Length: 256
Image 1 (cartoon, rainbow, N blue to C red):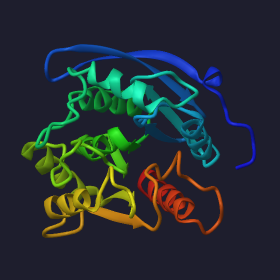
Image 2 (tube, rainbow, N blue to C red; image 1 turned 90 degrees about the vertical axis):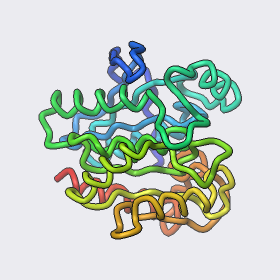
Image 3 (cartoon, rainbow, N blue to C red; image 1 turned 90 degrees about the horizontal axis):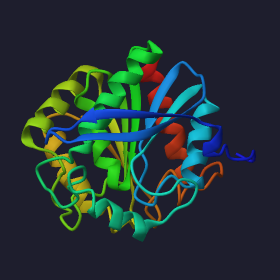
Image 4 (cartoon, helix red, strand yellow; image 1 turned 45 degrees about the horizontal axis):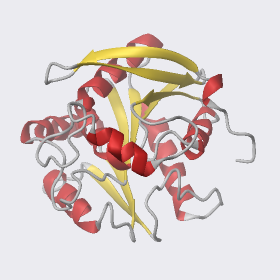
């Protein structure tokens, strides 16, 4: 993509409020771009909504998508991983980054957002992408009947506990039941990634695919971490571009 990246000032901005499982009422800004008949909830990664994430949104808009970007933390337009990590640690009622066998409460906000966007746009369902810190959320959101497709890109929670997943037993059961109805979702990592290591994929495979394939696990050649953004290479034949094209094709099939 050689065109200029659409900046956040060209998006439609609004606020969305939801009540989390712990009773906390949270409000975050929501940014929307595009007018396509397919709706994607694109959840930011830890580095923030930088130019690479905005470029990813443009790629989906060019394929006929309406892209919804919830702004959960950090500044928009540039990346700041360390600063954003401090912010997330201060948002403990929304993010439980070290928790194993339970998801972060912010998943409830994102699930309500998916439902609202499905109803607003009068579509049969939406797609979701979670990345890095939010990668696991894309898996949890598959339990929502309004979500028809999901891609978990380098899911990184719980931190420092690669052999565990960031979901409760009840959530796992709900997601498995839903995927049995609509077909498998997708999940990806780079083989050299130490933040989302092979042990994380082993845990997901054991939890979800023991009796049938519910999550298609892609392990791409190369180092790096952020498949669709910071480490994305917009070159035909490159593994990251191939992954994006496969995700778009999967989303198209599910949403159409």
